[in-house]
Image (cartoon, rainbow, N blue to C red; front, side, top):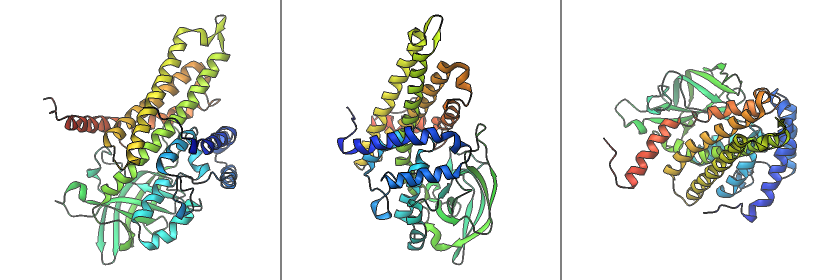
Amino acid sequence: MLFPVPDRVRDVRDAVHAFMTERVEPAEPALNAGDREKLLKLRQEAKDEGLWALGHPAELGGGGMPFLDYVYINEVQGRSEWGQLALGTFTLQDSLMLHRYASPRWRERYLAPMVAGEVSPSFAMTEPAYAGSDPTQLRTRAVLDGDHWVISGRKWFTTGAGEAAYTTVMCRTEPEGAPPHRSFSMIVVPTDTPGYEIVRETPVLGLNGGHYEVAYNDVRVPADNLLGPRGHGFVIAQERLGPGRIFHCMRWLGQAQRAFELMCARLGSRVAFGEPLSAKQLMQQHVFDSYTEIQAARMLTLQGAEQIDAGDQARIEIGAIKVVGARMLHNVIDRAIQVHGAAGLTDDTPLSRMYRHAREARIYDGPDEVHIQSTAKRILKKLGREEPA
């Protein structure tokens, strides 16, 4: 199968690519240093040029772009970690979740402002004391007390909690003995609720990336803050994570392509032992391996996206690309650093920061090992074979 960029998407994809390469990427040093005004300026430019919130539903004030079309946009948007924030798509998974499951009160309070970039959300699932690879161990609990939920526990890696208007909290709401995957619910918690305590921003591989540890000290919220039916937390999470992993993988492709371009430019401009690095066979191996890994990951990702667009959950494809995409991203950036030599270890290029974020990709949204095991089991079941003893 070939997956060429559809003609209907090409113009807007080219415009987003130009926006990323000409404005967002050059602004990265300022954005990394916390220049809020620079980010606000980029956001306004994106809105003025019709590039804002392209994947959000039109009825919420977004661009209304269909899922599969938006997948192609997400690839070029992913060239920089700031792309989502500059183009108003960082909130996409949360707005879709709220749009489908929230009570009218929360839809009215948060949805339009969130799509407009006036407020931001956060999502709390992982806990520091229990293995994130097995979310049925989560211990944050919500108990119904009259017409309020009372939430107690501790979460970490709640991305964006420091600026968020609310956090969607995955917590145990059902009694012991209930089926594990029907024991948890999602509850909307405004971050100004008494008892919601930000403990710290957790540095990740030396970077403060906005990941927070949060304590829930008997936080009381109204009963209608429940997102969807009781006990359906994992069902809603799966609906969120499936397309979300497609978006992750497409953004990883954008990052990898950028690293690949930097690597090739370096090979053509750097001279060692009387000839360009591009003439060295070992350097050519880096080019070949990177090119083939990027192309293979892109084909797998687009295949999964096409199946989701057709209404399939694409569990096998999504599990495969989560692992293959994360490995590909790490490998390509690693080779680009190697080609740059000492310069690749500094912040003179974006590669050092990209490399650290790439390592995160093999852990968040499920570690590689879990996806490998679950995907292999699904393949074996589909083919009608028993697992080997």
